[in-house]
Length: 445
Ligand SMILES: Cc1cc2nc3c(=O)[nH]c(=O)nc-3n(C[C@H](O)[C@H](O)[C@H](O)COP(=O)(O)OP(=O)(O)OC[C@H]3O[C@@H](n4cnc5c(N)ncnc54)[C@H](O)[C@@H]3O)c2cc1C
Image 1 (cartoon, helix red, strand yellow):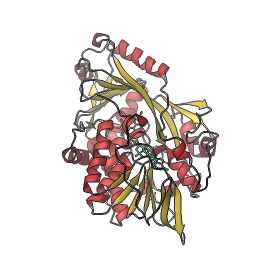
Image 2: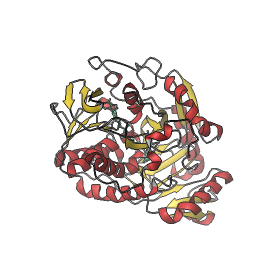
Image 3: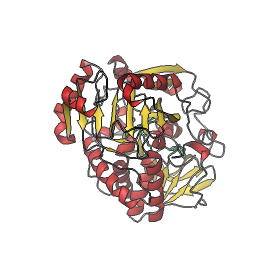
Image 4: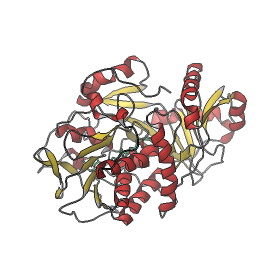
């Protein structure tokens, strides 16, 4: 199976730029694509603009877990809806997007982690359908494992899907319903009239619109800052490896610290260095530091600092923070954020896997890559209207956005269309960052 990451595949969506649109969506990841899909379902004609390729950044690079397990309480009802929507989308897409209730299992590295899992399960297990497995049950689940775990947190109806198939397929389904997508088209900024959004300026010209959604993933903070809105969003590198087809030692998705695996539809595994994240310190990281103090001081921020982000990255020291709308923007300079993976971390992951599963044999690698996860200091996203009339924001998915994406897309479509919102979104309000007040942190598991 070819993995269409980055610019190696040609643009699929090459429409001429219209002068006007009902809604402009900035970003062709799962959030932008699903919003376009649900807006088009309502009969609107959204225009989605993507600087690179649909799903070339986080939305194709992720592990494909669609989980309720260990989610924030405010996200739970939304991810429960998302799981239903994934099943509907699987029916509506022309391609098999690999949606399956394969189960998700969290394997504890330590007694402390097991206790954290137990605490989460006690509080939310009934809602999420999550149970704690005993050592005997874990042994039955992984009969080939050496030194198996003393328990596990498991949700049997959690799901998986194939990210780099699913998101482009949903984009095509949105187009069929009337959405227009243009790849290779960066949005440089907003135009305003009387304080309200009146359009966007892209590298290919201006588009009039009164409604804009920022779903720009790791670039949202850079985009919004130029518009006078500051959000403490940072991005961290996370590493992934695909294997070639191999013996089926486990059918679902599972992970412990520094090692995770999910069986794919093609018989290979997507493996990853779970919990190993690296942050390049740039000007935004310094600015956002006060917001991250709780995570830093609480010790629950397993992030390795790095210096000197490569040229062109959103928080690189040399990335322009301000630009004129008639000049090239940082979004055009780097079409796809495609970090080199940390090979040592992936090698360590393979070492751990070999120790745990010696009888499975050494996985034969198909490809390695990395992605930049967009993170927020309280580990939940921003899903809100902005204090600029006509502007909405859905970003900072904190490593969970693939699974929950269809529901946030559905919610954003309703918000943009002015319909009543049927979920409590107060936890995701932009205003929580108006001051440096103490934040309510998401689950520490
Ligand atoms: C390695 C890794 C593993 C992960 N595993 C999981 C998982 O198993 N389950 C899960 O639920 N989540 C997972 N995630 C997180 C998930 O992938 C993200 O939360 C989700 O894809 C974010 O979607 P998005 O649409 O917000 O952003 P993105 O997918 O990053 O899309 C944003 C898009 O906006 C475009 N853009 C930015 N600025 C502009 C501009 N000015 N003009 C036009 N276009 C612009 C970008 O090019 C990009 O394509 C993982 C992430 C990574 C990196």
